[in-house]
Amino acid sequence: MIAINKVLYMSVPLLMAVASGAQADDGTASDSLTVGLGGQYAPRYSGSDKQVWQVVPVLQGRKGAFFVDAQKGVGYDLQNDSGWYFEHTLGYDFGRADKNSGWRKGANNLKGMGDIDATLNTGLAVGWQAAPWLSMEGKATLPLTDSQGASYQASVTLIPVQNNEDTIALQSAALFGDSRYLNTWYGVSEQQSRRTGYRRYAAPGGFYGVDTSLTWSHQFDAHWGTVLSADYTWLGDHANDSPIVMRRNEGSATAAITWTF
Image (tube, rainbow, N blue to C red; front, side, top):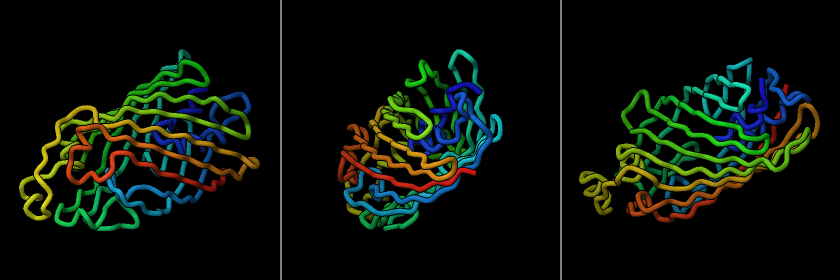
C-alpha cells in the first residue's frame, strides 16, 4: 500500500489521525484494529445555538483494501503509485430528532418539525495525494434507504507534522447539497411552518458552507494513543437563511483515547 493511507480517512479528521498511528515504518499501511472512546462538544444540530456533550466511539479496522470505521461505515479503497485513489463506503446517518437528544442531532426548538429518519448511505470519493503532506479529495454521499437528497464536498488536507509519535492535520472542505438534501436539513415546509411558527423556507441546492478542522494525534507507544480535534463550520446563505438556523458560525471539540492491537 502506498503512503496515501496516512490520509485515507481525511473526511473524518479524528479517525484520519488515528489511522496514522497504525502505519508501518516504511510508510505503508498494515492490517490493524483500533478501538477507543472519546467525548465531543458540538452543536445540537447544524445551525443550533446550543451545545451538547456526546460520547464518541472509536472503531477502525483494516484488512488489505477493506476497512471498517465507526463513523464512515464499511468500505474499500483502490490506489495507484501516482497518488490517485478511489474509495467506496457503506454507512449510516442517524438523522435528526425534533427534541433534545443525547445520541443524535436534535433540539427542543425543532418541536413540530418532525424527525429526520435514519438513513443507510453510500459514499464515493476520488482523491489525489500530491505529496506526503498534501492531498485533495472530492466526495459524494448518496442515500440508499430514504430519498433525502445527495451531499458533496471538496476538501484539501495539509499534514505539516507526521512521524511515529505525532500527526497534525489541517483540513478545509467546501460543502454542497442538492435541493432535496438542503430542504431536508434546513427547509421549512408549509405544514412544518403551521406546527412550529417558523416562516416557510425552501432551500435552493448548491454551496452551503465550509468546514475546517485541526487534528492532533499522539502515540504514547505501539498501543496507547490520544486524539484532539477542533472543528469550525461556517454556513453559507442557502443554509443560514433558514429560520431554524440560529447561528451560522459553529465550533466543536473532540478528545479520544485509543488502543491499537
